[in-house]
Each structure stands twice: as structure tokens, then as C-alpha cells.
Image (cartoon, rainbow, N blue to C red; front, side, top):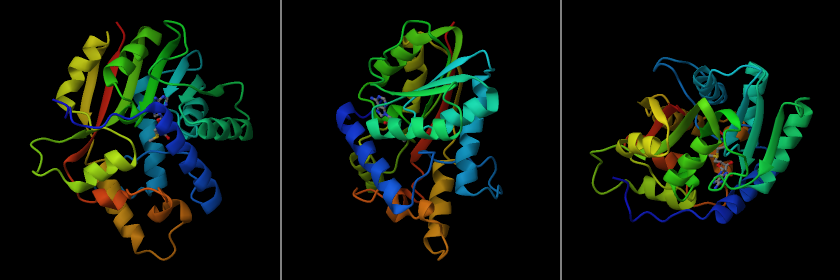
Length: 279
Ligand SMILES: C[S@@+](CC[C@H](N)C(=O)[O-])C[C@H]1O[C@@H](n2cnc3c(N)ncnc32)[C@H](O)[C@@H]1O
């Protein structure tokens, strides 16, 4: 069961956190259109962190199975990198929603720069109460955003409501791998407090999806391909003198108590990938 003692994120505060992170990334040269971990298919994959970030979006695209006739909701869209990649790869129309005004301004600017404003629109809003009619979308993608939302059940129920029958959901979320080392690794607490997140329990996910009206298609533990590998790659980069500003972890969360290296080698900090379908 999910740890009921976790402090629940407040959407308005999460929005301010991402406003601040977006503005600081603009000024310190660390801007990255993807605000998520990477995906390395195999242990011997030589992909860079940036290539692995795009690869994670491609892992979503493989499962979304959308074409140019589809309208996709990107729930917790960041600064639009993943949504714009979906448009460019599949031709689908994407609407992104984020609780951060600054991210939305940036995402719409990136869409304009890419000449994709006819296919990609980003708007401010709270995923806890989606501003869309029932059955509006062929697919919903949520890359690492549910961890910031105070009630996963409510968000998933909203997602189910706005999906058309036959529509798909693909998401990634962080979870604690059990049996966990006791006491809980302090890096996980730093992540949760510094980044206003809670950890899911993978055991809960089937029930969460089913109670939301969604049929589970796939539930994977992708920790080895994502969070654990990212920790290794960041550790390597920490000692590289020519690392780009975008990969300098001291630029990731400049004002926060948490840095990604707090989770290096922490194998009970897990990442799951779920896909589901509205019957
Ligand atoms: C880790 S970032 C991921 C961004 C993006 N999915 C990506 O992969 O680049 C988390 C995102 O979730 C959004 N988010 C968090 N809580 C939200 C809420 N209640 N409603 C809408 N968006 C929210 C944040 O604003 C941010 O865009």
C-alpha cells in the first residue's frame, strides 16, 4: 500500500516550483525541452542522456499507436518537448496541460519555433480537474507527472473520462520497490520534499487503473532502463570537465535541497511504465 504518511503535493505550489525551475534553466544555459529521465533499452546501450530522454518519448509513441487523425492529451506537459516529438513523429494533434504558467509560455514558443502551432497547443490547467469534455481524446500521455498530483485515483478517473472508448493511456510514475531497505533511503525523502512528489506503490496500480474505468494492458518495472541508469550516467558526467550546462546537475534544481545524485545507486527508487485502455 502507498505510504499514507507522505505529504501531499499542492498543485499551485508545484506550479510555482516549475515556474522557478523553468526561469532559472533559461538563464543558466541548462534549458532542456525534456523534463524527464531517460530510457536505455539495454545495459550496453551507449545512448547519451539526451538521446535516452527522446527514446523515452519514443517508447510512449510505440504504445500510444496514434496517427495524424488522433488528438493526444499530454498531461503534465513540461515545456513541450515530448508533445512536439509526438506531433513530429506521428502527425497527431497534441494538447498539453501543465500547472506551470512559465512552462506553458515556453512550450507555446517552442511550438511556434518549430512551425507546429496548428498541431500543438499548450495550456495552463490542473490535471485534478481537466478542462475538457468527456471523450475528447484518442490517447493520453503522462510522463512523470502523476507523482506531483495529490490524488492519483482522481487524476486517473479524469483521464478515463476524457478518453474516447478504445483510447489509450501511457504513463510513467515513480514507486518504491519492496521489500525496501529499512530505513527508507534519505535520497527518496529528499526527492519527495524537494520536488513536491509522492511515491506510488506498483501493487496499487492495477486497482487504481481499474477503478478509474481503464483496462490494464501493461505494467512494467523500468527502473534498470531509466532511473538507475540515469544515476550512473550523471555520476560519470559529474567528473567530465567538458559536460554541457544542460547536463550539469548543479543546474538542474539550483534552489532545491534535492539533486539527482542523491538517488545514485538507490535501487528501491523505482520507475514504472503503465499502459491502459478505455473499453
Ligand atoms: C517532471 S515534469 C514532466 C514534464 C514532461 N512530461 C516531460 O516529460 O518533459 C512534471 C510535469 O507535471 C506537471 N504537473 C504537476 N502537477 C500538475 C497538475 N496538478 N496539473 C497539471 N500539471 C501538473 C508539471 O507542471 C510538469 O510540467
